[in-house]
Image (cartoon, rainbow, N blue to C red):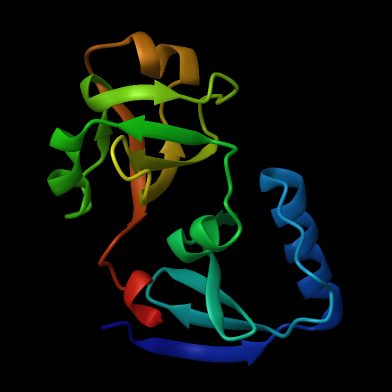
Length: 159
C-alpha cells in the first residue's frame, strides 16, 4: 500500500504544463477543464486527473500510468513482448531484449516507453528505454527497458 506523504491540488498553470507535456510526448489531448491533484509518495509523485492516476513523476520526468495508456490508446513508444515475458513483467522485472517481438522504431535510448503482450496487446509495464527501438527488435541479449511501473504495483492499485 502506498503511504501518501503529501497531497495538494495543482494550480492552473502547473496543470497546463503537465497537460502540454502529455500532449507533446504522447499526443494525448486532455480537456483543460479537468482537476489535477498531486500525491507525494515514497520517492515519486502521482498526478491524478479528475481523480484517476494518470501520470507519475520520477527523477523529474513525467511518465503515463498504465491506466492512462489504456484510456487514451497511446501508441507512441510501444514495445511488444512475447507471452513468455509476461509473468516476469507482472512482478516488476526489467524488459530483456530477447523477449521483444516488435518495437516502435522511433524509440530513442532514454525515451519513455511501455510494453504490451503480443496476444492481448494489454499494457504491462511503463519504463525508460535502455536502447533504441531498432536495437530492441534486433538484439538478442541485454536489458532493453528499465521498468518503473507495472500491472499490480502500488500505482496500479491506486484506482
